[in-house]
Length: 343
Image (tube, rainbow, N blue to C red; front, side, top):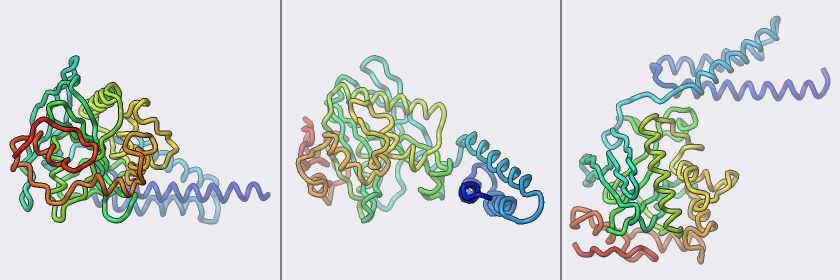
């Protein structure tokens, strides 16, 4: 066997090994198979594939063809898999959808839950109507996860002239008793969930934890036309999810990449090869480079200026969502001024 043939044979063996291991994890996260079947399959599949491919003896070509055929069949079934209905947590039990008629956008299953520290959330679903001609700004919301810079959650908060906000958060839909697993997001296991909610719901939900999560709020620089185009495009996508669920993907359909995929070119011209497009923790430096947030200082210094202060009072101390949102932004540079004030 020549050098080229040996190299090709080794490369093919490596690919088959990688495919068998990926297939094992795909089976492990399969839905809706019983747990015992998924567990057994995740062990038996790679053992069978590697035995067929590498075991010495007769019928090598036939065995390798069977291994490749098995990988192809699993791949086809994996790609054809669709999300299934599950026992969702109460906060994600309903999917939002919207109707747009001219300047009028009505959002159904718009969440306005109440989160009291140490208690179960009081889940409230409403129907809210917004005047798109009054859409006058959008804020980038970043929620860092610990000391690892690359880990963060990214949201957008669209603000209207009357002080109301629509927060858009793309998340993995959670089942009761389950936990978010970023690895599962590589294997078509989690369902993508679009949360549309008030700020006193989604933002206070994070501030009410013990200890409170860190939140950073950055006013974004964009034309009213681009902001409206972005908002309506997001609502269209939310309607698509409502009609036909799709899988969350840690790489392609996450909190960051979904927002990037839907952004108008005039708003977020981010090339696909820019790694910061895929890593939420680097969103700030990317948005600075694009001129969408303040780029007059280093990102670390900007983060300190736009971090929500400690000890934010709870929403029920205020007369309305609008007043609480205005108070939340007190002291943050560049925040929009809302007419409502006071407690």
